[in-house]
Amino acid sequence: MSLDMIHDVLSWTTLLPILVLIVSFNFLWHKKCSNREKKKLPPGDMKFPLIGETMEFFNAQRRNQLFEEFVRPRVLKHGKIFKTRIMGSPTVIVNGSEANRFFLTNEFKLVKSSWPSSSVQLMGTDSIMETDGERHRFLRGLIGTSLGYAGLEILVPKLCNHVRFFLESKWEGEGNTISLYRSTKMLTFSIVFECLLGIKVEQGMLETFEKVLEGVFSPAIEFPGTKFWRAKKARMEIEKALRKEVREKRKEMEENLHSNEKEDGMLLSRLVNAMIKGEISEKEVIDNVVLLVFAAHDTTSFAIAMTFKMLAQHPDCYSKLLQEHIDITKNKERDENLSMEDIKKMKYTWQVARESMRLFPPIFGSFRKAITDIEYEGYTIPQGWKVLWTTYGTHYNEEYFKEAQSFKPSRFEEEEMPQYAFVPFGGGPRMCAGYQLAKINILILVHYVVTKYDWFLLHPQEPITMDPLPFPSLGMPIRFFPKQN
Image (cartoon, rainbow, N blue to C red; front, side, top):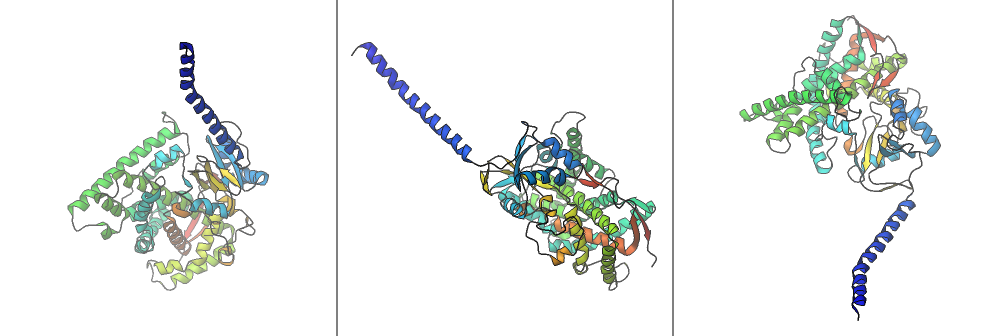
């Protein structure tokens, strides 16, 4: 065999495996592309790269018309499930109680929480908003100890004293006209800190937290002058103050061997006790306190404001609610605190509050991310895509709520509704941990306002706007007069 022939054989011997590899790779690639093409994506318009329909989404949200201007037209065009692109991410928006149930109950299995980078950085990377699986369950259980029935039953007398003192000092001390929304924000904020955490509220604390909130949905650009930059600075101030409180609490608990988290019943004590045991870190304590403050005060104050808005517009409902509270006071001594049994009797009041939250949900919904390809309703939601469920997708749907645009508190007694149709605080493993606290706050405040004051709203038809959460655009001014006993 000549040298040229040997060279040719060796060359083919070397090239053959490479050619086989290339052919195999091409085959597999085309097969993968073919499989992708077979996947049926939900209908919809992704529009422009990166931007997509982000501007339309946020413009509708700011006007508190997310459902009417953004979701409803696309549902009519594409159906209950459709695709779009928001904030640079391909996103599937789902509507209906079954969709809510499917995605909310499959947390950690098919989807995971997926908030914008700005929200994660400002709320805390180690909060229950971001943790998954067993870690999430452990942290939620730890927080839930203070927010469960037993913990809240102990808290009720503190809440009553706090609310009465607040009304007497802040309302009556300011004349007879105040901003109801601003006032309830101050009240619910101080309740979280002083009644639940055992931390005294200092002047300017609420304003600092509000600066953080302003940046949670803004682009995560840490450049001087941007919303996110200001929010990040405020977050650092909060961290510094909370770190001081946490370390002082730890020192106090370690110095007193007989002191433990059960003595004062405060959530901060429970969290610090877990930190002393090595179960959680200092950062986890701080991040979860920050998240809890936002979750427990901002949405609750809006729910309270909307409850009074609806009562002002429907005097017949107000008369029925007022009678419920008068009946409760008949069996109480003057200035005697409410009990958990009294709160259980406020059935119609809770119907009014729930109907108010149905029409004006404190949250518009939340984002998830597909952690695997998801087959749903004949469509494929690819791994990595976002999924957005909305409260409006069911709250305003005649399929679940007859005369959905009407205010009918009795529907929560008379009508049967599917699970996950009424979702003002979410659902599944990530349902708002402060839901029961919010309920008790609303009922206690309503009780003391309606039994101690005559009142009326100056602008009962006041429009609602969003930035980034919903709020009454004029602050909901209220005029009140102490009742003559």
